[in-house]
Length: 331
Image (cartoon, rainbow, N blue to C red; front, side, top):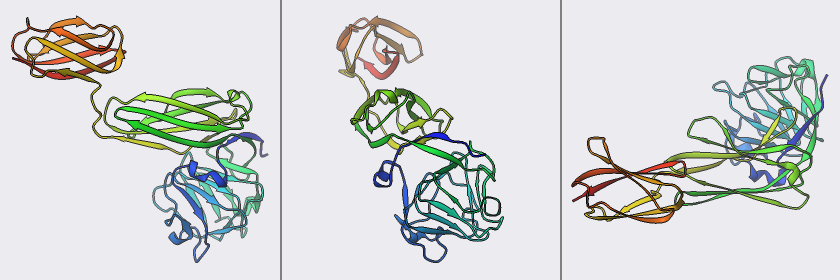
């Protein structure tokens, strides 16, 4: 039996730009789904895309659409997905399909008309027949028949999700509206090809019917590609996600500067962030720490180095649970 679950729905057709790589079907020529020109922007949906089938619109599914690697797709059906015999959507884990009120999946009644998620059959034209929303399927729902579950919409709208990057300093901004209940939503991040990790949690119950804005600040220490998204889970383990924000930082500027360099007697330090309980370590070319001194809290500090022999040193600053290094020449 299909069971009711509480779903956090994070976008509507009018706010589809909140998601990344949105593809909207606007024509149903020839083979339907697999025709590049049937999509806006042009191109058959690929891994990571969010798909919208508009209300009062029918898109055909003909043949096995993805013979190679399975794509991860989020599919919103406001209109109709119409399967032909042998029509198949073979999707990867974390894919989700939402059929809203007024939306439907139609079949010719053959067993070759299928939807699978992570190799699990969610829909079979012969067993499931024509189905109408509101229903959804994910890796967590059942097996056909019954691969789709009924859902109720909890209205949480992501009105905006953006970022600002200044030097090494990243600020994420998001705006939500119409939240109820005791659920928690999360800000997640990952670096390069790593796993998603929760970096902040917030209570949805703190969001009123008024617009709610929130910021998250982070200092990026190393170069690379960083990704961020908002995750909205429900009590049954299902989740919706915002668009993904990608931040590329090729050469982050140092937050720690020493000058003059080369130096002779007095060395000045400048920090882009205020330090507390910091220490400076001078390491010789042979790898030996030859001098350690505490730093005064603040943005700048001066140290007498006239007692250190001439040579090349690595100057390391430790503070605020971070560590920074610069090369220094004493002459």
